[in-house]
Length: 400
Ligand code: PLP
Image 1 (tube, rainbow, N blue to C red):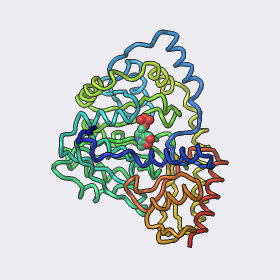
Image 2: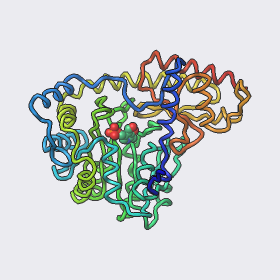
Image 3: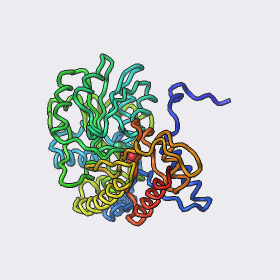
Image 4: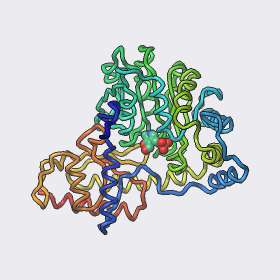
Protein backbone atom coordinates (compact mmCIF):
# COMPACT_ATOMS: atom_id res chain seq x y z
CA UNK A 1 0.00 0.00 0.00
CA UNK A 2 0.85 3.65 -0.05
CA UNK A 3 3.31 4.87 2.56
CA UNK A 4 3.86 8.64 2.86
CA UNK A 5 7.26 10.02 3.77
CA UNK A 6 7.84 10.75 7.44
CA UNK A 7 8.36 14.42 6.69
CA UNK A 8 4.68 14.88 5.89
CA UNK A 9 3.33 12.63 8.65
CA UNK A 10 2.43 15.54 10.93
CA UNK A 11 1.26 17.87 8.16
CA UNK A 12 -2.42 17.53 7.37
CA UNK A 13 -4.53 19.14 4.67
CA UNK A 14 -5.09 22.67 5.86
CA UNK A 15 -8.24 23.27 7.91
CA UNK A 16 -8.99 26.22 5.63
CA UNK A 17 -9.07 23.94 2.59
CA UNK A 18 -11.19 21.37 4.47
CA UNK A 19 -13.79 24.01 5.35
CA UNK A 20 -13.67 25.33 1.80
CA UNK A 21 -14.29 21.82 0.44
CA UNK A 22 -17.21 21.22 2.81
CA UNK A 23 -18.74 24.63 1.97
CA UNK A 24 -18.33 23.98 -1.76
CA UNK A 25 -19.99 20.55 -1.39
CA UNK A 26 -22.94 22.13 0.47
CA UNK A 27 -23.24 24.72 -2.28
CA UNK A 28 -23.36 21.99 -4.92
CA UNK A 29 -26.20 20.35 -2.97
CA UNK A 30 -28.11 23.61 -3.31
CA UNK A 31 -27.51 25.27 0.07
CA UNK A 32 -27.00 29.06 -0.23
CA UNK A 33 -23.59 29.00 1.45
CA UNK A 34 -21.63 32.24 1.77
CA UNK A 35 -17.90 31.55 1.86
CA UNK A 36 -15.84 34.05 3.85
CA UNK A 37 -12.87 31.74 3.96
CA UNK A 38 -10.78 32.62 0.93
CA UNK A 39 -7.69 34.81 1.16
CA UNK A 40 -8.21 36.26 -2.26
CA UNK A 41 -9.30 39.74 -3.45
CA UNK A 42 -12.58 39.67 -5.42
CA UNK A 43 -11.17 42.30 -7.83
CA UNK A 44 -9.96 41.41 -11.30
CA UNK A 45 -6.30 41.68 -12.32
CA UNK A 46 -5.91 45.22 -13.80
CA UNK A 47 -6.04 45.50 -17.58
CA UNK A 48 -2.53 46.86 -18.16
CA UNK A 49 -1.16 43.78 -16.39
CA UNK A 50 -3.19 41.38 -18.53
CA UNK A 51 -2.07 43.27 -21.66
CA UNK A 52 1.58 42.83 -20.70
CA UNK A 53 1.05 39.09 -20.41
CA UNK A 54 -0.64 38.92 -23.82
CA UNK A 55 2.18 40.95 -25.35
CA UNK A 56 4.72 38.56 -23.81
CA UNK A 57 3.00 35.61 -25.45
CA UNK A 58 2.95 37.36 -28.83
CA UNK A 59 6.62 38.33 -28.47
CA UNK A 60 7.55 34.70 -27.93
CA UNK A 61 8.47 35.05 -24.26
CA UNK A 62 7.36 31.49 -23.79
CA UNK A 63 10.61 29.76 -22.90
CA UNK A 64 12.52 29.01 -19.70
CA UNK A 65 13.82 32.16 -18.08
CA UNK A 66 16.72 32.68 -15.70
CA UNK A 67 16.35 30.33 -12.75
CA UNK A 68 15.02 32.67 -10.09
CA UNK A 69 13.50 35.38 -12.25
CA UNK A 70 14.32 37.23 -15.46
CA UNK A 71 16.71 40.20 -15.21
CA UNK A 72 13.74 42.50 -15.98
CA UNK A 73 11.67 41.09 -13.11
CA UNK A 74 14.63 41.31 -10.74
CA UNK A 75 15.16 44.94 -11.82
CA UNK A 76 11.49 45.66 -11.15
CA UNK A 77 11.74 44.06 -7.69
CA UNK A 78 14.91 46.07 -6.88
CA UNK A 79 13.18 49.26 -8.02
CA UNK A 80 10.14 48.44 -5.91
CA UNK A 81 12.23 47.84 -2.78
CA UNK A 82 14.04 51.14 -3.37
CA UNK A 83 10.96 53.21 -4.22
CA UNK A 84 8.53 51.88 -1.64
CA UNK A 85 10.74 50.66 1.18
CA UNK A 86 13.94 52.64 0.84
CA UNK A 87 16.05 49.46 0.71
CA UNK A 88 18.92 49.05 -1.76
CA UNK A 89 18.98 45.47 -2.93
CA UNK A 90 21.37 44.65 -5.78
CA UNK A 91 20.14 42.46 -8.62
CA UNK A 92 21.85 39.38 -7.13
CA UNK A 93 20.13 40.07 -3.81
CA UNK A 94 16.62 39.43 -5.12
CA UNK A 95 14.80 36.28 -6.16
CA UNK A 96 11.44 35.43 -7.71
CA UNK A 97 9.39 32.25 -7.48
CA UNK A 98 5.94 30.80 -8.05
CA UNK A 99 4.25 32.87 -5.34
CA UNK A 100 5.49 34.05 -1.98
CA UNK A 101 4.69 30.54 -0.83
CA UNK A 102 7.46 29.11 -2.97
CA UNK A 103 9.82 31.82 -1.76
CA UNK A 104 9.15 30.77 1.85
CA UNK A 105 9.54 27.13 0.90
CA UNK A 106 12.83 27.76 -0.93
CA UNK A 107 14.19 29.75 2.00
CA UNK A 108 13.35 27.14 4.63
CA UNK A 109 14.44 24.21 2.44
CA UNK A 110 17.76 25.96 1.85
CA UNK A 111 18.49 26.74 5.50
CA UNK A 112 16.80 24.30 7.88
CA UNK A 113 18.44 21.18 9.25
CA UNK A 114 16.58 18.68 11.44
CA UNK A 115 15.88 20.20 14.83
CA UNK A 116 16.42 23.80 13.75
CA UNK A 117 13.80 26.09 15.24
CA UNK A 118 11.69 28.82 13.69
CA UNK A 119 9.92 31.23 16.02
CA UNK A 120 6.45 32.06 14.69
CA UNK A 121 4.03 34.33 16.54
CA UNK A 122 0.41 33.16 16.42
CA UNK A 123 -2.20 33.66 15.18
CA UNK A 124 -0.35 32.99 11.92
CA UNK A 125 -0.93 31.83 8.39
CA UNK A 126 -0.98 28.02 8.79
CA UNK A 127 1.42 27.37 5.94
CA UNK A 128 4.33 28.82 7.91
CA UNK A 129 4.53 26.01 10.43
CA UNK A 130 3.55 23.38 7.87
CA UNK A 131 6.39 24.40 5.54
CA UNK A 132 8.84 24.42 8.46
CA UNK A 133 7.72 20.88 9.40
CA UNK A 134 8.01 19.62 5.81
CA UNK A 135 11.57 20.98 5.79
CA UNK A 136 12.38 19.02 8.96
CA UNK A 137 12.43 22.00 11.29
CA UNK A 138 10.55 22.73 14.48
CA UNK A 139 8.06 25.58 14.72
CA UNK A 140 8.14 27.40 18.02
CA UNK A 141 4.68 28.97 18.17
CA UNK A 142 4.32 31.98 20.45
CA UNK A 143 0.70 32.97 21.15
CA UNK A 144 0.09 36.73 20.92
CA UNK A 145 -3.10 37.86 22.54
CA UNK A 146 -5.68 40.37 21.34
CA UNK A 147 -4.76 42.59 24.30
CA UNK A 148 -1.24 42.94 22.81
CA UNK A 149 -2.77 43.69 19.41
CA UNK A 150 -1.85 40.15 18.31
CA UNK A 151 1.74 41.42 18.11
CA UNK A 152 4.85 39.63 19.39
CA UNK A 153 6.40 41.39 22.40
CA UNK A 154 10.16 41.69 22.92
CA UNK A 155 10.08 39.65 26.13
CA UNK A 156 8.21 36.82 24.41
CA UNK A 157 10.78 36.79 21.61
CA UNK A 158 13.66 36.77 24.08
CA UNK A 159 12.11 33.84 25.97
CA UNK A 160 11.54 31.79 22.81
CA UNK A 161 15.15 32.01 21.61
CA UNK A 162 17.39 28.95 22.01
CA UNK A 163 20.77 27.99 20.53
CA UNK A 164 18.77 26.09 17.85
CA UNK A 165 16.77 29.15 16.74
CA UNK A 166 17.43 29.72 13.07
CA UNK A 167 14.70 32.16 12.06
CA UNK A 168 12.06 34.46 13.44
CA UNK A 169 9.15 34.90 11.05
CA UNK A 170 7.03 38.04 11.22
CA UNK A 171 4.05 38.96 9.05
CA UNK A 172 2.66 42.50 8.91
CA UNK A 173 -0.16 43.20 8.15
CA UNK A 174 -1.05 39.73 9.34
CA UNK A 175 -3.11 36.95 7.94
CA UNK A 176 -5.31 36.16 9.94
CA UNK A 177 -5.41 39.04 12.45
CA UNK A 178 -4.94 42.06 10.19
CA UNK A 179 -2.62 43.44 12.87
CA UNK A 180 0.37 45.43 11.62
CA UNK A 181 3.64 46.49 13.25
CA UNK A 182 4.51 50.19 13.30
CA UNK A 183 8.14 51.32 13.54
CA UNK A 184 7.62 51.64 17.30
CA UNK A 185 6.23 48.09 17.49
CA UNK A 186 9.20 46.68 15.55
CA UNK A 187 11.98 48.50 17.40
CA UNK A 188 12.01 46.43 20.64
CA UNK A 189 12.06 43.23 18.55
CA UNK A 190 14.91 44.57 16.44
CA UNK A 191 16.82 45.35 19.64
CA UNK A 192 16.43 41.72 20.74
CA UNK A 193 17.61 40.46 17.34
CA UNK A 194 20.68 42.69 17.45
CA UNK A 195 21.63 40.99 20.73
CA UNK A 196 21.32 37.54 19.11
CA UNK A 197 23.42 37.60 15.94
CA UNK A 198 22.87 33.89 15.14
CA UNK A 199 19.17 34.46 14.38
CA UNK A 200 17.85 35.42 10.96
CA UNK A 201 14.68 37.38 10.35
CA UNK A 202 12.10 36.51 7.73
CA UNK A 203 9.38 39.09 7.14
CA UNK A 204 6.31 38.51 5.03
CA UNK A 205 5.10 41.87 3.71
CA UNK A 206 2.47 40.38 1.41
CA UNK A 207 -0.28 42.77 2.60
CA UNK A 208 1.90 45.91 2.51
CA UNK A 209 -0.50 47.75 0.21
CA UNK A 210 -3.65 46.96 2.16
CA UNK A 211 -3.50 49.26 5.21
CA UNK A 212 -6.04 51.68 6.66
CA UNK A 213 -6.50 54.94 8.54
CA UNK A 214 -3.16 56.34 7.40
CA UNK A 215 -1.20 53.47 8.94
CA UNK A 216 2.42 53.83 7.84
CA UNK A 217 3.73 50.53 6.58
CA UNK A 218 7.38 49.81 7.45
CA UNK A 219 9.62 46.80 7.03
CA UNK A 220 12.41 45.92 9.50
CA UNK A 221 15.41 46.09 7.14
CA UNK A 222 14.44 49.68 6.28
CA UNK A 223 14.40 50.51 10.00
CA UNK A 224 17.65 48.74 10.85
CA UNK A 225 20.18 48.36 8.01
CA UNK A 226 22.34 46.10 10.20
CA UNK A 227 19.65 43.43 9.81
CA UNK A 228 20.04 43.40 6.04
CA UNK A 229 22.80 40.79 6.11
CA UNK A 230 20.54 38.30 7.92
CA UNK A 231 17.01 39.10 6.81
CA UNK A 232 14.76 37.96 3.98
CA UNK A 233 12.12 40.51 2.97
CA UNK A 234 9.32 38.60 1.26
CA UNK A 235 6.62 40.12 -0.92
CA UNK A 236 4.47 39.28 -3.93
CA UNK A 237 1.89 40.47 -6.39
CA UNK A 238 -0.97 38.15 -5.35
CA UNK A 239 -2.89 40.35 -2.92
CA UNK A 240 -2.04 43.94 -3.92
CA UNK A 241 -2.63 43.43 -7.63
CA UNK A 242 -5.30 40.72 -7.42
CA UNK A 243 -2.97 38.22 -9.09
CA UNK A 244 -3.32 35.09 -6.95
CA UNK A 245 -3.52 32.78 -9.95
CA UNK A 246 -0.47 34.14 -11.73
CA UNK A 247 1.84 32.78 -9.03
CA UNK A 248 4.64 35.31 -8.66
CA UNK A 249 6.34 36.18 -5.38
CA UNK A 250 9.72 37.77 -4.78
CA UNK A 251 12.15 38.59 -1.99
CA UNK A 252 15.29 40.50 -1.11
CA UNK A 253 18.09 39.10 1.03
CA UNK A 254 21.83 38.43 1.26
CA UNK A 255 23.43 37.03 -1.87
CA UNK A 256 24.48 33.72 -0.29
CA UNK A 257 20.92 33.00 0.86
CA UNK A 258 19.46 34.02 -2.51
CA UNK A 259 21.89 31.63 -4.24
CA UNK A 260 21.00 28.76 -1.90
CA UNK A 261 17.30 29.37 -2.55
CA UNK A 262 17.95 29.19 -6.31
CA UNK A 263 19.44 25.70 -5.81
CA UNK A 264 16.12 24.52 -4.34
CA UNK A 265 14.11 26.22 -7.05
CA UNK A 266 16.27 24.73 -9.80
CA UNK A 267 15.32 21.23 -8.62
CA UNK A 268 11.65 22.06 -8.13
CA UNK A 269 10.33 24.29 -10.90
CA UNK A 270 13.34 25.51 -12.97
CA UNK A 271 11.87 29.04 -13.08
CA UNK A 272 8.64 30.92 -12.51
CA UNK A 273 6.21 31.08 -15.47
CA UNK A 274 7.63 33.41 -18.13
CA UNK A 275 4.27 34.99 -18.96
CA UNK A 276 3.44 35.60 -15.32
CA UNK A 277 6.82 37.24 -14.90
CA UNK A 278 5.95 39.71 -17.69
CA UNK A 279 2.66 40.44 -15.92
CA UNK A 280 4.42 40.97 -12.57
CA UNK A 281 6.90 43.38 -14.19
CA UNK A 282 3.93 45.43 -15.44
CA UNK A 283 2.37 45.33 -11.98
CA UNK A 284 5.52 46.53 -10.21
CA UNK A 285 6.63 49.11 -12.80
CA UNK A 286 3.16 50.29 -13.83
CA UNK A 287 0.67 52.77 -12.33
CA UNK A 288 0.03 52.31 -8.62
CA UNK A 289 -2.85 54.78 -8.13
CA UNK A 290 -5.61 52.17 -8.38
CA UNK A 291 -4.30 50.58 -5.19
CA UNK A 292 -5.75 53.55 -3.27
CA UNK A 293 -9.29 52.94 -4.63
CA UNK A 294 -9.11 49.28 -3.75
CA UNK A 295 -7.81 50.16 -0.31
CA UNK A 296 -10.77 52.53 0.21
CA UNK A 297 -13.17 49.79 -0.84
CA UNK A 298 -11.55 47.29 1.55
CA UNK A 299 -11.73 49.89 4.35
CA UNK A 300 -15.51 50.32 3.90
CA UNK A 301 -15.93 46.57 4.21
CA UNK A 302 -13.62 46.36 7.22
CA UNK A 303 -15.65 49.04 9.03
CA UNK A 304 -18.89 47.29 8.13
CA UNK A 305 -17.71 43.90 9.38
CA UNK A 306 -16.03 45.15 12.56
CA UNK A 307 -19.05 47.28 13.46
CA UNK A 308 -21.55 44.50 12.93
CA UNK A 309 -19.46 41.89 14.78
CA UNK A 310 -18.97 44.07 17.84
CA UNK A 311 -22.74 44.63 18.04
CA UNK A 312 -23.31 40.87 18.47
CA UNK A 313 -23.32 39.80 22.14
CA UNK A 314 -20.58 37.22 22.78
CA UNK A 315 -18.30 38.39 19.96
CA UNK A 316 -15.46 40.88 20.17
CA UNK A 317 -13.44 42.17 17.25
CA UNK A 318 -10.30 44.28 17.31
CA UNK A 319 -10.09 46.82 14.47
CA UNK A 320 -7.30 45.59 12.18
CA UNK A 321 -4.74 47.96 10.67
CA UNK A 322 -4.51 46.07 7.40
CA UNK A 323 -5.04 43.00 5.20
CA UNK A 324 -8.63 41.89 4.52
CA UNK A 325 -9.39 39.75 7.55
CA UNK A 326 -11.05 40.19 10.92
CA UNK A 327 -10.04 37.90 13.77
CA UNK A 328 -12.79 38.00 16.40
CA UNK A 329 -12.99 36.47 19.81
CA UNK A 330 -15.92 34.10 20.34
CA UNK A 331 -15.09 33.55 24.04
CA UNK A 332 -18.56 34.82 24.98
CA UNK A 333 -20.19 32.09 22.86
CA UNK A 334 -18.42 29.12 24.43
CA UNK A 335 -20.55 26.77 26.56
CA UNK A 336 -23.75 27.96 24.91
CA UNK A 337 -26.08 25.36 23.41
CA UNK A 338 -27.33 25.26 19.82
CA UNK A 339 -31.03 24.77 18.93
CA UNK A 340 -30.09 21.13 18.16
CA UNK A 341 -28.82 20.65 21.70
CA UNK A 342 -25.12 20.69 20.89
CA UNK A 343 -22.76 22.50 23.27
CA UNK A 344 -20.27 24.87 21.68
CA UNK A 345 -17.05 23.97 23.45
CA UNK A 346 -14.46 25.34 21.01
CA UNK A 347 -14.07 27.89 18.24
CA UNK A 348 -14.20 25.01 15.74
CA UNK A 349 -17.60 23.98 17.18
CA UNK A 350 -18.74 27.56 16.64
CA UNK A 351 -17.56 27.71 13.02
CA UNK A 352 -19.11 24.26 12.35
CA UNK A 353 -22.39 25.62 13.75
CA UNK A 354 -22.16 28.73 11.54
CA UNK A 355 -21.56 26.58 8.47
CA UNK A 356 -24.26 24.00 9.18
CA UNK A 357 -27.00 26.21 10.61
CA UNK A 358 -26.30 29.63 9.09
CA UNK A 359 -24.53 28.49 5.94
CA UNK A 360 -21.65 30.88 6.46
CA UNK A 361 -18.13 29.48 6.06
CA UNK A 362 -15.48 31.08 8.30
CA UNK A 363 -12.26 29.64 9.75
CA UNK A 364 -11.69 28.86 13.46
CA UNK A 365 -8.77 30.41 15.31
CA UNK A 366 -7.44 26.94 16.06
CA UNK A 367 -6.42 26.73 12.39
CA UNK A 368 -4.13 29.71 13.00
CA UNK A 369 -2.79 28.65 16.38
CA UNK A 370 -4.91 30.92 18.62
CA UNK A 371 -8.29 30.15 20.21
CA UNK A 372 -11.10 30.95 20.80
CA UNK A 373 -11.32 33.15 17.70
CA UNK A 374 -12.60 32.98 14.14
CA UNK A 375 -11.43 34.62 10.95
CA UNK A 376 -13.61 36.34 8.38
CA UNK A 377 -12.13 37.23 5.00
CA UNK A 378 -13.97 40.36 3.84
CA UNK A 379 -12.51 40.26 0.33
CA UNK A 380 -16.02 39.78 -1.00
CA UNK A 381 -18.95 42.00 -2.01
CA UNK A 382 -20.66 44.25 0.54
CA UNK A 383 -24.04 42.62 -0.23
CA UNK A 384 -22.64 39.19 0.62
CA UNK A 385 -21.02 40.53 3.76
CA UNK A 386 -24.28 42.10 4.96
CA UNK A 387 -26.21 38.88 4.35
CA UNK A 388 -23.49 36.81 6.07
CA UNK A 389 -23.48 39.11 9.11
CA UNK A 390 -27.28 38.98 9.33
CA UNK A 391 -27.03 35.21 9.43
CA UNK A 392 -24.21 35.20 12.01
CA UNK A 393 -26.23 37.58 14.19
CA UNK A 394 -29.33 35.36 13.99
CA UNK A 395 -27.29 32.22 14.66
CA UNK A 396 -25.71 33.76 17.77
CA UNK A 397 -29.12 34.97 19.03
CA UNK A 398 -30.48 31.42 18.68
CA UNK A 399 -27.92 30.05 21.16
CA UNK A 400 -29.06 29.34 24.72
N1 PLP B 1 1.82 35.24 2.92
C1 PLP B 1 0.63 35.42 3.50
C2 PLP B 1 0.57 36.07 4.83
C3 PLP B 1 -0.54 34.97 2.87
O1 PLP B 1 -1.72 35.17 3.46
C4 PLP B 1 -0.43 34.34 1.62
C5 PLP B 1 -1.64 33.82 0.93
O2 PLP B 1 -2.66 33.55 1.49
C6 PLP B 1 0.82 34.16 1.06
C7 PLP B 1 1.93 34.63 1.74
C8 PLP B 1 1.03 33.45 -0.25
O3 PLP B 1 0.92 34.25 -1.33
P1 PLP B 1 1.30 33.76 -2.80
O4 PLP B 1 0.01 33.74 -3.54
O5 PLP B 1 2.26 34.78 -3.31
O6 PLP B 1 1.93 32.42 -2.70
